[in-house]
Length: 242
Image (tube, rainbow, N blue to C red; front, side):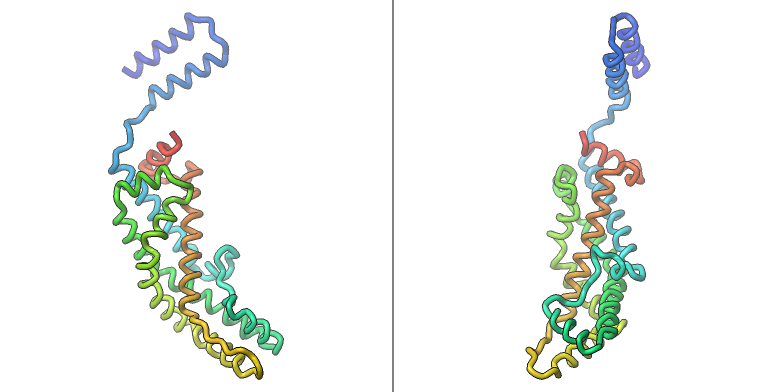
């Protein structure tokens, strides 16, 4: 059947006076006829989106969980808490800059360590995605999948992620460093005492950084065919452009 269609198009070109543009268009149309795929099924869309999200999360989580994954990445590096920026400034004035730098390093080390535990939590949430969710994501904005994940899992993830962050911060002594810095600052005469929740701050920024990396991977898969490493991804995200 395909050969017959191809022959008909070739004969049409031969027996009509066509410009080069028309000939090229004819071959293009022929190629479309020969390569047209069956419409995507709901199952393919669902599995394709889940596969893409799992791929993005795996790459994003693996990158940030490496040493310096947060610390040396300007997009997601966790800085000294801005609400107590005056603490950092005053301590540096007192010659305690090395302690401040050490604290920021350990803060990011905690996030890097916690990211290793985050991947299975995200993947479990992806597996529960519905078919309707998948279709909406396929036709949505460039970061629609990431926004869906953030919208539907953030509260649950935070609840599970927070103790991981706390354990990580304790393991790399970030909590201790922060306590020492704040206690030193609070001893300075005439300053307003501070006592922010370090775990809350670190958890929020660690999750935010992870979502940032996932969104970057989603964008690559949507825009760059070379990032679609399986036939299902090629089929689903190729369909998206039609």
